[in-house]
Length: 378
Ligand SMILES: Nc1ncnc2c1ncn2[C@@H]1O[C@H](COP(=O)(O)OS(=O)(=O)O)[C@@H](OP(=O)(O)O)[C@H]1O
Image (cartoon, rainbow, N blue to C red; front, side):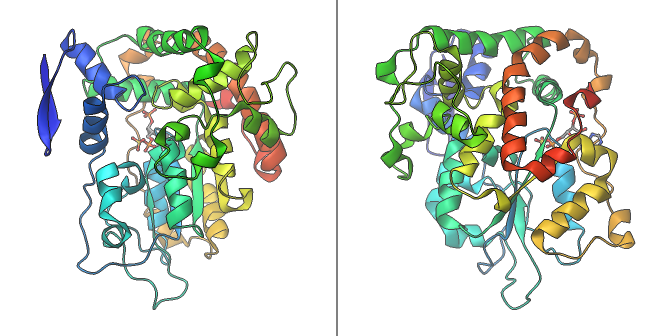
């Protein structure tokens, strides 16, 4: 038994080992985790930790919504160097994914931001990379800040996964080798796919907009929506009621990835995440950027961000301050890197990388025209 808990109390949880306990916490927001672990995860690992202004300020004009390990810290801090930006008191407010914070309400959230209402042309915003992947974030943001703009930086999925793994290992959240860390998540997905039944899988479209229908929010990796966004309906596709035919592995994969959105491998599957955002916001309110491009040419990427936000280009003085911010720890130089099997990872991500490319072609053709191959950072 391990004692876990937050300010609201401590509970005893039966886990087989310290490592299993940590793994349980890591995946605690998944459906299978006991509620006490879900709460612990939400309220302790996602602490609402930023300092506050005395008076409530403005709601954000922009959000950096991801991806985790995609260079979001660098992008956010570079953006904050712009003379017309007054950022939040901290990068990752996590407000929209931390239930305790959300319950405190928007007035409390606004204390994290300056009041820009009297200074036209000055923007404020925050950068929480989990917003892109945690379904409740987009639902809550669409409700609370419907006119905001969103910036996302996608990285080669294999490299993102490895960066995540190395980070988790160093923070002592896992002791597994990279191969075993990957296989654990892949096997969990396979178990979900093999145990799939149509009766557990019913899309509750009308409930999705409702905050109380949390179970429905988890089902947002709707295969029909992915097909719509890409502009084609794959053969042998989902039944009219949205459930998957017995031999439709693509459909089941979408469903199971939707359920397992906290898993380290699923975090690198971008197509479902972006399609979900496109259900709430039009494509012209989401700026898709690429980590590999930013790593090579930060001013180039940041000037695209400035243009998207209606700001003038960055000047030399601001660009000189692009000294960053969560860079240089590169996982490539870590000895843990050698415990990864790049071929298996690339093979695992290949189907969804193809879907993601199709999504860019259809919804973000201008972005796709300058897209650098994922191979670039291998
Ligand atoms: N300019 C530049 N060049 C090369 N690499 C860069 C750069 N900026 C950020 N990074 C890499 O981005 C990774 C951190 O991403 P995030 O800031 O999004 O991480 S976090 O989710 O906020 O923890 C982390 O990746 P890894 O080093 O591979 O772990 C950073 O090194």
